[in-house]
Structures are given as C-alpha cells and as structure tokens.
Length: 99
Image (cartoon, rainbow, N blue to C red; front, side, top):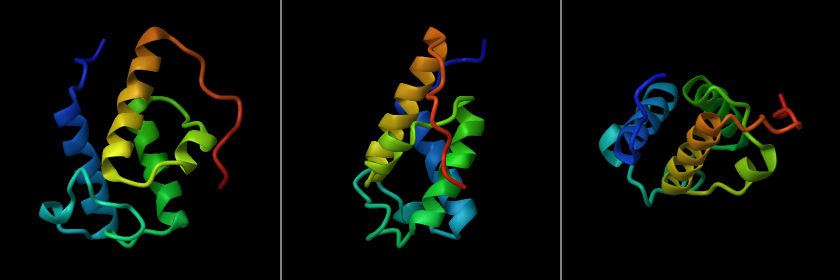
C-alpha cells in the first residue's frame, strides 16, 4: 500500500493540480482561497479538478459532496476523506460525475 499522504502533502498535490491545469501561480493558492472567486475557476474547471483528483484518490467523487466545495481547504479535506474511505475499502458512490 502506498504511503498515506498527510494534509500538507495533499495541499501540495492540490496546488500542483491547480497551478498546472489552470496556469495559476502556486504562491497565490492558499487554503482559504475560494475556487470560483479568488482563483476564477468555473464549473467546467471543477469537473476537470475532480477527474484529476480521481487519479490521486483512486475513487470517483460523490457529485453531491463535490458541489458543496468552495475553498481550497474544503478540497483538501475532501481528498483527505476520500483517501481515508479508500483505505477503509468503502465502495465508491453510485452516481457518476457529470461529463
């Protein structure tokens, strides 16, 4: 089993995804940054983020939980909970992400 990522490592991966995918300056991405206002992302960008996060978590995100995420910190917490769920062997949500 892969080494478990701590919260700081998850944050660094999220920053990497956001900066690489959306040409954002990594130093401008803070835990308190809002995805839609501060980082100027839209709903299509959010879908792309979750597609990439699936590679990190190995799980399909629950779209209802995903829709509630507004900040980078909430995104980090979401990844953390998805990794924990994967570790416990919990099944993925039944509902696929919209494409």
